[in-house]
Structure formats: structure tokens, C-alpha cells
Amino acid sequence: MLTIEKLIQILPGAAQSPMDLGDIVNGINFSPVLNTKNRVAGFVAQCGHESAHFKLVRENLNYSAEGLRRVFPKYFPTLDLATEYARKPEKIANRVYAGRMGNGLEASGDGWKYRGRGFIQLTGKANYTQCGKDLGLDLVGKPEMVEGTKAAVATAIWYWQKNNLNKFADADDIKGMTKAINGGYHGLDERTRYYTEAKKVLST
Image 1 (cartoon, helix red, strand yellow):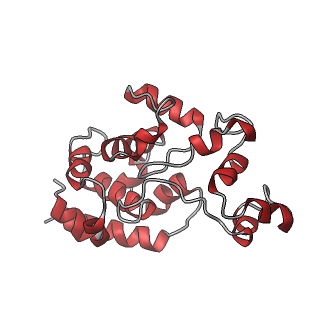
Image 2 (cartoon, one colour):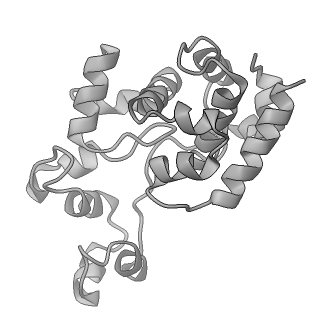
Image 3 (tube, rainbow, N blue to C red):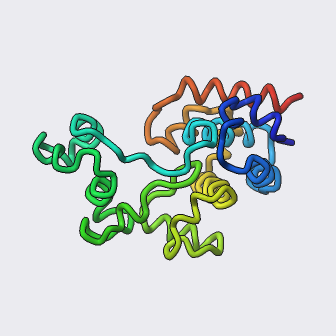
């Protein structure tokens, strides 16, 4: 059973989280999806990394021109174009997320409206639509709901289940979990450290 004390032991930064740690713990403990030590440890470790110890629930798109060229070279092929969008998060989101993940064109504003939110960032109108339907929430009409603690936990568990992440947790496959969430292995060392600590703490 996860407790607030154990959560902070695993992720010390959670003590400074503006989110309701009780809601986080309850959401995990009462989930039929996260029903073993490995599964809880994997979820806490991955969400802990993705959300900076459950402190961040909104995607940061405040990039410099150089950052845009490095992270989104496909969408910013020239420095002039990157400079036009630099430090303008709404414009950036509307460009890089346009015409995919169920979003409309750049002018639709869908990229910004359905930018990444939650502890495992829900991104794109199609995901907000399907997740909202499955959870019985109007996430399309009120996407900012995902920034609330209960919804941030619920949408992360939805993502976890939808992508069958339990199979990786059951196999102690932290790389598999990371790839399914990140698309690569960014932060693998940190995620592995959190996972190892979580398993140890949850065994006590």
C-alpha cells in the first residue's frame, strides 16, 4: 500500500508539489490496474520522472529559437522561422501539433488547446476525446481538467492501461516502460533509480 510518506521517500520533491498527494496516493491504491508492487513502482517511477516528482502537469513549450531548431527541426527548418516563433508557447504548440493526433490545422488552435497535460502527458485532440470517453469526462470541452490532481492520475492510469505497460512492469523491464511513454530512453537512469527505490520502499 502506497502512503504519502512512502511517495515522498521515493520522490522527495513531491513534498513541494502543489498537487494533492492524498488524491495521488488514493488514485494509485484504488486502481484495479496498478495492483502489484512492480506495477505501482513502475507507475510512480515513470510519472515521477515525467512530472518532476508530481509537480508539473502542463507541457512547457517556451523554447528559444535554438531550442526549436534542435527539438523540432522538421517544423522549424530555418533560423528565421524559429526566431519568429521563439518564446511564444501558444504559437509553437499550434505549429508542431497541427494536423496530427486528431488536431486541426495550425489556425484551429487545437495544438495549444490539447497540448500535453497530466502526469503522463495526454496530448492531441484524439487522445483527449478517447480518454474522456473512457473516463466519462468532457476533456474535449474542458481540457484543463487534466491539470487537476484526480484527473491527472486518472488520465495517466488510462495511458498506462491503454499501452499495456503492466507487461513491462511485470517483467521488470524499465526500458520497455520508458520506450512506451517517451518514444525513446530519455531519463532512463533516473527512471531506473526511482523504480529501484520504489520497489524497496513498497516492500517495507
